[in-house]
Amino acid sequence: MERIKVLVSGACGRMGQEVIKAVLQDPELQLVGAVDRVQQGKDIGEIVGIDHLGVTISDNLTEAFKVTTPQVMVDFSTPASVMENTRLAIKTGVYGVIGTTGISPEDLDELRALVIAHQGHLLVAPNFAIGALLMMRFAAVASKYFPSVEIIELHHDRKLDAPSGTAIKTAEMILDSRKNEGQGVIGEEKIKGVRGGEMGGIHLHSIRLPGLIAHQEVIFGGEGQTLTIRHDSMSRESFMPGVVLGIKRVMELPGLIYGLDQILFN
Image (cartoon, rainbow, N blue to C red; front, top):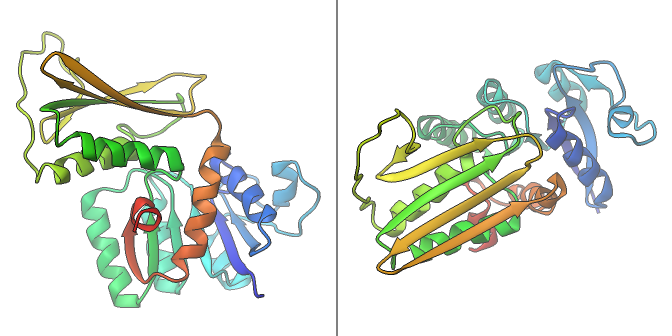
């Protein structure tokens, strides 16, 4: 059986290194390329603590596509570079599995049009942890029965964007479940921002602290009761089964898919 050729963008980051190891461990996948702004010229095996792999880190995605001819690019780069990387992949005919957050609804519209124009395959997933996907799905169900909800997301202090893509996706799913009927915003902020951000009347709160990985609580309130749905990723390994699934399924599914739940639950 021919293996799927994979290039990892953002290969030297903490998520990128986990993706490298996950690809190497799967007999259906073949690591052909690694791209990052740092450590160029080194073998990616040295960076992830594995023996020499014969895959040299490049800082030029265009050149890496030409040299390695991957079928799928997995991107865990930065919010500042993810759109440029994704545009290039689509135009080059490389399928994309995008885990970098910071992609706006307007960005998604642009990528959808590009994918259609180039007959591409693209998965944009705010979260790859199976438990997180279930948390979001359960929250969408619960939102039909509780009038009020707030979302608290907690991540490590090096995360570059807030709120997280998972929090935004959760709010979108709740609003969609309610047919976009938000909830009223009540009260006055004596300190600006103390109630967090607001999306369709739903308050989102972002916490950034060392020692955390990725965590989220969705707290519902009703008459005389609350319901809390929480997911915790204790290590980055928790995301890897979803990433590997995304690589394999994006080969089969044309167009733009937003959220791994669209693959997992459909």
